[in-house]
Length: 125
Image (cartoon, rainbow, N blue to C red):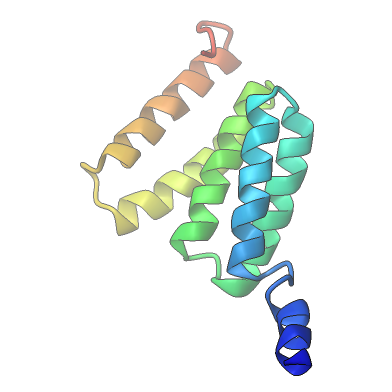
């Protein structure tokens, strides 16, 4: 029995464990919703590194986090970083979801909004 518990301690709670990544994602989401965008970004960046190791840069999980980081950067008025990240997310979405997928359309609209905001012609909602 003790061996099973020790294995749980050393494997289930590693940073690249799916349970840990899900929990960290939930924590980052809560931080973002509460307005602590810097902390949310920090947590999501850690999640992104772990997802790259666990799933690779071509995985859905990794690219969803890239998109989330893009939105956070836009909210923090970091438009250059936001565009870079959203364009990476869009590239993956178009290749894997198809051009007409709602996520692709939403990301395209978001990129246009960030571009307008960067030029001072729109308000970020």
